[in-house]
Image (cartoon, rainbow, N blue to C red; front, side):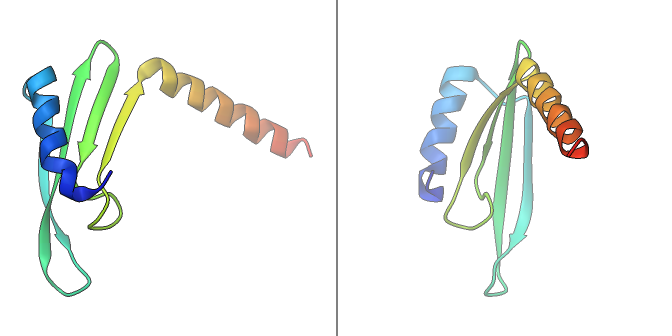
Length: 89
């Protein structure tokens, strides 16, 4: 999503899910030598995490990530299978 939409998305998530379980700010250097405040907030609910980050890779892009413990396990299983398949070639 566009970083200019971060505040409205963050406020909507707070309205829906309450205060984040984890909240972090950090200074992010810009190419012009300045600094911007990056924000990362995470809500944890029943084995699922929802993370929103103000600047993801550049100053124009924000991100929202939804991940479950079950999804993480499946991802790791597939990665292991892929590695085993690559070794057999």
